[in-house]
Image (spheres, rainbow, N blue to C red):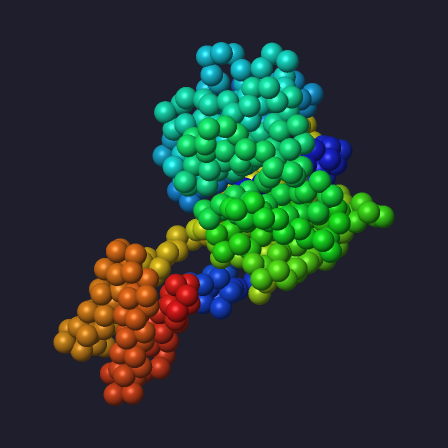
Length: 435
């Protein structure tokens, strides 16, 4: 759920880059039971360092499932580094550096508030490090000449790379564990890691250490992996140098995500658990960098921008909130987020939304209280089973609720039109639970 801008793109943009209604059904393409229109995304500038510094290029941004955004940037010469954290309540705030005088670069954040990145000393060499929620820093490899923490899962397992070697680390480990790959960009909750191997192929590494290389995609890398082992990556053409984003399913199929109609390149930066990819691509034959969201159903859908600056979508969480940055021609940049109108996002929220719809039917006089009670009982049962993590039981209760609604249609208590939103949301929720 995170990403970083490549330096060459920063240079491209600084040199002169500037910027449909595509509905997707969660029940078909993502796993929920409601319709979402990506054209409803709204963009917000969430802050920058410009008030205190003349120019900082924000090139790393991540967002967790709580909606907390972190990131970092440097001055155009790459001599000074700055990190930030943003929340809805607190806004944009600089992250304090450790008392040792080293400077922290924030790259990623997990749902527990642990931030990963690099610590730079007086020699300006970055060492992989994490920052705990209480503000303490842990430097993982002080001997590394170059390194960074790229991702952290919610169990606290960390992955990244130093000196052209990938690693995995956790507080319970006796030491940092290196493995034979160039980079390690992302780790999911099961411990699968993705990155680029030493032969310049994207790879997936299992928790046991087994490698699956994308042997058909030379000069490729996998940037992010979700909890269903779907991944997002890029491949660079050896002859043209053009970069193409792609989706790699857990089953192993590869889908080229394409480009904007008048563009030549795309970058798939991050993927969430619903198969949505956030990224960016060129438009107008490379004159503009524009952000997008992609699904297999919709293809590339351009996200809104605030100006002619280049906008990069770099991270996406499971609520569909996207985080990124924009850079103008003066080398100033700001962090931004793209959000959809608020609505349910998790199975229990969708069941609650169905209950609200049933309540509306009762309030509107379409259903009597006694008529609605059997359906409400089944939905309440599904909620309780979800709370206790009884997924199979919850699916059973939701299927019973579907039968109840269909029975109401058959008996004339509801019309097909009145029942349709109930059935759609129930079917999508069941699908998201694997039922």
